[in-house]
Image (cartoon, rainbow, N blue to C red; front, side, top):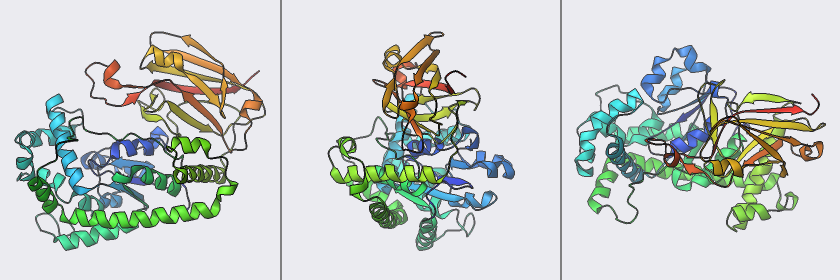
Length: 449
C-alpha cells in the first residue's frame, strides 16, 4: 500500500448502485473542500463536463465504471464497495418499488428520472417480471452489474457478447489494482480499512441507508433467489474474490498497527471499549486507528493558525457531519446522524480564543438548546443569540489551558441531545437523512484581537 494519505491527484469512487454508496460517498465528500468535489452523479453528466474540468476535481464520487478513469488527465486512484450480489438485486427492486409507491417516476435528477420512467412498468408487475425484463437498461442494473462497473465497458464493443469468463478475469484484474475495496456486509471493518489506508479520521457508527419496505421476516421464494444467482454468476465469484482480497488487506492492516502501536503504549481503552460494546479487541483496534490518524495528521505538517474564519465547506472533517449543501460561500452543513460532530483544527495554542458559529437551520428548538461544545474534551460556556426562528449565533471562549494538547490538532466537538429524521420537521420531503443543526460557518479569533 502507498503512503497513508488521500491522493494528491484525483480519487474516483466507483459507486455501484445499492452498495451503501450514498453513506460512504458522504464520508468521502467530507474529506474534501466542497469546491473540489465533482457534481456529476452519472456518466452523461460526467461526459457533459469539458475534460479539463473533469480533471480538476480532486474527488469524483459517481455511478461510473472503471473505464471512466481514462476520461480524465493523469492517473486517478480508484476505490469501490461491493455487496452480496443477491442482496444487492433484492435491495434494488425493493428500493424502486418503494420509490414508485411514494413518489411516482419523478426525480429531480434528469438521468435518474429517465431511468425510473422506463423501469416503472417492470417494477409494478412484480419481481418475476423485473428479473425477466427484456429492457437493456433493466438487465444492466441487475445482471453482473458489479463486475461490469469494476471491469469497465465491454472491450469487444456494443452488440458483441463477452463471455462470462472474460468478464470475470477483466474485473478481477481491475479489482486487484483498486486502492481500497470495501464489503458492505462488513461495513465497520471496511471503514476501519479505509481510515487506515488514507490516514483519515476513523469513522464510527455510520448509518447505511435502508429501504423502508425491506422484508425482514418473510423470506423470498427459493426460485427467485436461484434466478438472481443465475443472472449474477460472475458477480458471485467476483464477490468471493473481493472478500479474499479484503481479508488479506485487513489482516495486513491489523499487523502493521500492532507493530507500530503496541497495546502498552496506548492510552486507556476504557472509553473505546464502551463504544465497541465491551469488545476488547475492537476497542484496541479503534485506539490504534486513532493513533494512526494522529500520526498521519502530524506527518502532513499542517501549519498551525492563530485564527480561522470560513464556512464549513472545507475538509477534512471528523465524524458526525452531513455533506455540504449550496455554494462554498453561502451554503451550510448539517450535523448528524449521530449526536456528536467533530472538527480537528490546527490551532495555535498560546492565547485564549473566541469560538463563534453561525447556525442556519435547526431540526428542533430542543436540539439547539441542548447544544454543548467541548474543546479537547473540556466543555466551554456558550452564549446563544437568536436572529430569527432558525438563524442563530453561538459563541464561547476557550482558554489557552483548554487549547493545550499533545495532539497535532485542537479537537472541537458539537454535542446535541438528539437528532431527527428530516421528514419529522420538513413536510413533503424525500430527504431521509437524520439531522441536528445546520452550521454555516465557524470563526475562531484570539481574545483581545
